[in-house]
Amino acid sequence: MNDISREIERRRTFAIISHPDAGKTTLTEKLLLYGGAIQSAGSVKGKQGDRHAVSDWMEIERQRGISVTSSVLQFAYGGKIINILDTPGHQDFSEDTYRTLMAADSAIMVIDAAKGIEPQTRKLFQVVSRRGIPIFTFINKMDHEARDPFELLDELETEFGIATYPMNWPVSCGVTFRGVYDRTARRMLTYGDYHGGARQLEEIDCAIEDTAALDALIGARFRKELTDSVELLEGAGADFDLEAVRHGLLSPVFFGSALHNFGVRQFLEHFLELTTPPLPRQTVEGSTVDPCAPGFSAFVFKIQANMNKAHRDRVSFLRICSGRFERGREYYHVQGGRALRLSQPQQMMAQERDIIDEAYAGDIIGVFDPGVFSIGDTICEVGEEKRFTGIPTFAPEHFAVIEQIDSMKRKQFAKGMTEIAQEGAIQIFFYPNSGMEQVVVGVVGVLQYDVLRFRMKSEYGVEFRQRDLPHEFIRRVGNADFNAGDYNLPRDVLWVQDVRGRNLLVFNGQWTVRWAMEKNENLLLSEFYEEIEG
Ligand code: G4P
Image 1 (tube, rainbow, N blue to C red):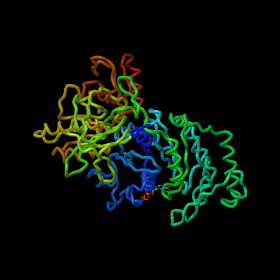
Image 2 (tube, rainbow, N blue to C red):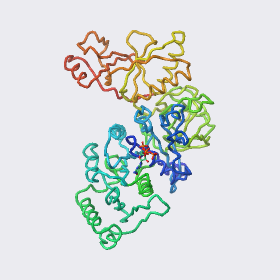
Image 3 (cartoon, rainbow, N blue to C red):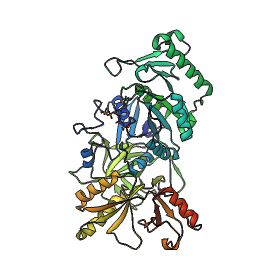
Image 4 (spheres, rainbow, N blue to C red):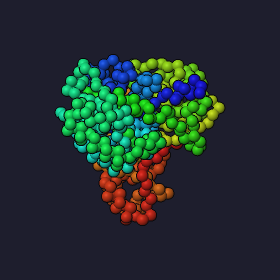
């Protein structure tokens, strides 16, 4: 194996997904502590303004103390280079969250043990599972009252249709939480009231058959419960199958407490062992690009404007798919059709941006973008021509009519809306045969409207009027020469066109979609989800 392949093989690039408040930030912070990437707990999340989240960039984030944009954090642990793709924790997340998942090779799903699967766990899981990448589950907050672990696993299996394999098993929860039993290491990890304080964790080798030792550790009652549960798991549970894990069909499950840093190191170590190095990527042309193949290639999965107010810049985030990136070398931007040097390549950590000289497949780099890149673009060696697939556009779920207020600023309004839409933060639609003064803006999370308002004002000097629409369900229309007037449609349906002039209908209820389909046998409606192709 050459040096480049060795570097690539030790990369682990993953995203952490969860419903807000399940403990994603807390877990990320603990993982970063292990990597020595941050000095003290509490620096990832800024609550009341004094501490800022490491990933807080934009002014709006600082004002609200939330994280709108996703960031990338890199650290080294146990000989591996770890890239965590952080996703917005706020419930009004955007397409950004979804797209970030396209750059990951595996996902960690954090679940609150008292709540189980929540709405956003569900949405994010669907996006991740579509890619068939490994999914690890961390069932958090075992120090609080929790639901029955068997019931939680059953919920994951029946709702998500994946098999689960508990890597450890909790002994009670809440005030009587005694710890977890590591099934592979055959070791009891005990949890005490003192936990989180100065004393070290106790990790004790202890076979499940060693009744006396277990009784001494957790008491006879809990020992009995534990041995019964483990017996049940061994008998009725799924077998561990690494291949199934690697294809996202079997999720290794860990119980722990992120807040008390309980079970986190063990989780990290198992995770690093079981997850994959950078995965191959497909091209539109139908070939597979191996990460260790010679030659650099990458795709743009996110574009972020104005991360630094002093610079008024735009940064494109690239996921490297193969080879090694070298600063100063010329690469080819396939969609732009020209060679270029990537300006000021950086990796991000906290508000710090480190200019880097090299990076490898699996890594994420941010490059200054003078406005030439779009989401999904491929950058590769000069003389090559390939385009990566797999950056989808997701269906917006909220719609509003946005209208410029000052007609003198028509140009700035159009420019701002178009540029922000190009970055993928919002999607714009037009009423058929009308101009740009009034557009329908679709977003995945309503917070994007605030971001839009803020950016239009601060970057383009334009204010707008916003009228929220009750519509939620967008469908593509497949009929050629479509005219809504020719069909028997519900009165409140919204007929719009996208930037390419394609027709869409937006409904305000699932049942109205069905109604329209029943009343119009020849109407061709399809789901919105689509892959952006270069
Ligand atoms: P998120 O990023 O998924 O939204 O969740 P976050 O880590 O911010 O955690 C949400 C709340 O849950 C926080 O409390 C956090 O301290 C708490 N929490 C996280 N992990 C655990 C755990 O293992 N056990 C318990 N008991 N609580 C946990 P908060 O009061 O909302 O915020 P803070 O004031 O503690 O920051």
